[in-house]
Image (cartoon, rainbow, N blue to C red; front, side, top):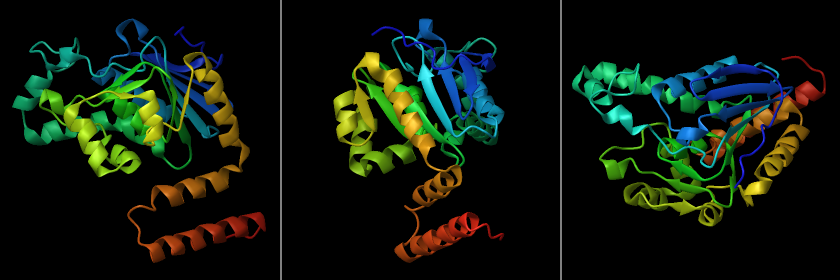
Length: 269
């Protein structure tokens, strides 16, 4: 598959450590831009992703996450587990030998790169081609929606390496495919091909590789068609539905609709 053309031509608001952020009106594009290394991930990349979330202008309604090259992301740079670690970063082995509270805080900081994509004021769309492995899989899961090329392959390899998925991916994976299938995918570390991903609800849409950008653009246009405040309220209702009881969710619907009706009627709170 040929490398997709950049989705927007606007100047980059952020361009470092393998992450580029551009904004064109209501649409922001976050690009993983280390194609030569299949967009492997590192703490520096995670810090850049977190900064991208903090940098988004308030006008942005849709965030597209895409990747240059043949792979979405081949996962964590394994150099992190060597005694020398990634250049400029502490070795994960040294972190493990240190204070437990400091280790917990470090992992929490890493997770910030994966948490902002689902905030209520934006809808995030991952455009996935090729491999999305480990941390790459979890980054795709961080987004609200996933559009995949037909060569996309997902795999959660952490458990096979004696670890666990710890970058905020376990909850969305379980919500999307159910506990039993999520457990099987994580423990076996097997590849989930694009067709299966669509069948089990992991992918919203699968298209030929050459049509990936166009499919994402069409979806983005559809997401922008509804009034922003109604989209925000609807997303909040759906995001918080799972832990609520039926009556609690009905009450949340009434409250949200009341706010929408008062807004449409021009009535203040």
